[in-house]
Length: 237
Image (cartoon, rainbow, N blue to C red; front, side, top):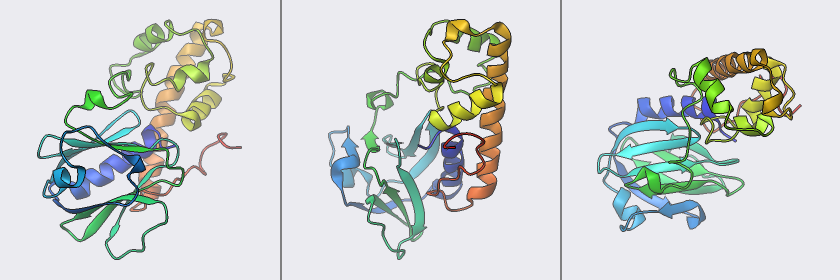
């Protein structure tokens, strides 16, 4: 599942290449992933529009359009974006293609068919978007803010870290890495954590996510659809 580090790198890649480009054609190969939250026809609404900004919020990517609408992508378990030449062979799990004026395609591929691509003029209409807590790496999430937000939760600490209402952007993989680095068993209940453990957890969260983002930025290159997780210490092992 793409998480904060993965999507932050994808966001930067697309921001650098796509802002100002116009969509000259749309192919919806499998409508199951598309959620049109506007009163307009999906392809018609997108065709002729240009990208004004690429943003990330939690585990959502936001492709803002000059018309005021946005494509909001929630990749869920296996969704990926592929930026490639138009002549490149299409994968069997390609669901949506945007043809761009520079001869490139932006394709949404999803082997599990669990992700969603929303078209909306109001981000609050996207399920789960408005309920998100602050970003896990938001500078305003200080140690004291982190402690205060933790006090509202009493469950297992891994479940709290992956709760997007607590902090946005962390999923199973990076929760495992954060807890391992902090030396905290994932199924410990929050009330049982000492002040020292909470401080260790906070610093582990920030360092783990920051370092992973830097590693992915260096290693992904133009293959933003590839999942790179071999540098993780414990997840999947």
